[in-house]
Amino acid sequence: MIDGSAPRPRPGVSRAVAVLVLVALAALIPLLGPSAALHGTGEAAAPGTGGIGLLRTVLFAALCVPVGELFVNRLARSVPGAPPAMPRSWAPYAATAGFVAALALASVVSTGNLVPSSPADLDVGGLYATRDGKLALLEVNAFAVAGLCALSRRPATQLWPLAAVVVAEALRAHPTTEHSPLLGSGLTLVHLTCATLWVGGLLYALRTQHGWGVREAGAALLGLYARVAAVLLAAITATGVWSSLRRMPPDTVLHQLTETAYGRALLAKVILMVAVVALALWARIRLHRAADPLAACSPARAEVVALGVVVAVSGLLTALPVPIRW
Image 1 (cartoon, rainbow, N blue to C red):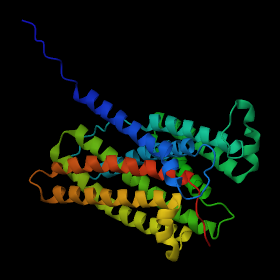
Image 2 (image 1 turned 30 degrees about the vertical axis):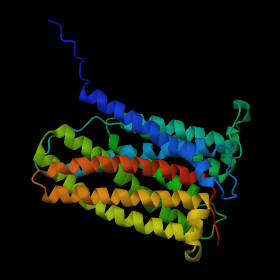
Image 3 (image 1 turned 60 degrees about the vertical axis):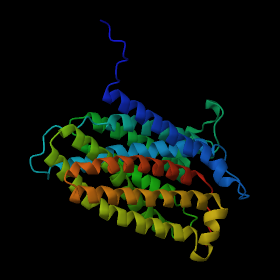
Image 4 (image 1 turned 90 degrees about the vertical axis):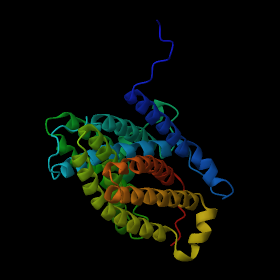
C-alpha cells in the first residue's frame, strides 16, 4: 500500500528556509526605508542610499556573528558539565560576506561617495589619499584577515581584525569636521562593541544550547549570557542616548524624531529596542521562574529576530543624512 501523504520537511530544512525568508524581509528595510524616511522632510538622499544601507547591514551582521561566537565560547568554559562540542562556526561565511560588503563600500568611497557605473569609475589609488578611503581599505583587509584566522587552528585570533573593523566604523561615523569627533567615536566604539556582543552572543548561545542537548548545561549558559547582557544593555542605552543628544539637542528632539529622516529611523529603532527589551525580560523571567528553564528559548528566539531587524534599521540609519545642529 502506497502512502499518499506528503513527506514532512526535516526540521533543519524548515529552519533554514525560515531564516532565508527573515533575511530577505530584513533586507527590504534598508532598500525601501530611505524613501519612506525621507518622505515630506525636504531632505535629499545621497545616491544609492538604499544599497549603501543594505551593505552596512551586511557588514554589521558579519561583525556580530564571529564576535558572538568568541564571546559565547568564552562563557561556555565556565559552565559546569558543558559538552566539549560546540556548534559549527559561521565565522568564515560571515567574514566572506563582510569582505564583499566592505569591498563594495570601498568602491563607493573611491568614486567620491557616488555609486560607480563601471569599473573605469573606480579610483583605487585615491583611497590611500583620503581618511575615509583608508578606513574603507582597513575594513576590507580586516575582514580578509578575519576569514583566514577563522579557518586557522587558532580561530580566536580573529578577535584582532574584528576589533579593527569596530574601530574603523567608529572613526568613519565621526569625521574630523564634527565637533568633538573623538568623543563621538568613543561612544560609537562602546555602542557597537556591546551591540555585536549582544546580538551575536544571543544567536550563538541559542545554537549552542540546542546543539548540546544537555538541559542543565544549556540553562546555565543562557543564565551566564543573561547576566552579561544586562550590562551590555545598560551600556548600549547610555551610549545610544548620549550619541543621539549630540546630534539632536534636547530642545529639537521631538521635532527631529518626526520631521527628519534620521529622526524617524531613530524613532523606529527605539520602538524596536523597547520590544527587544520586553522579550529579553520575558526570557529572563522564564529562565529563573519556569519549571523548565529552557522555556526561555522561545522569547529568546523572538528576541534574535527582533535584533536582526534592529541591525537592518541601524544599517539604514548610517546611510541617511544626519541632521547635525551644533
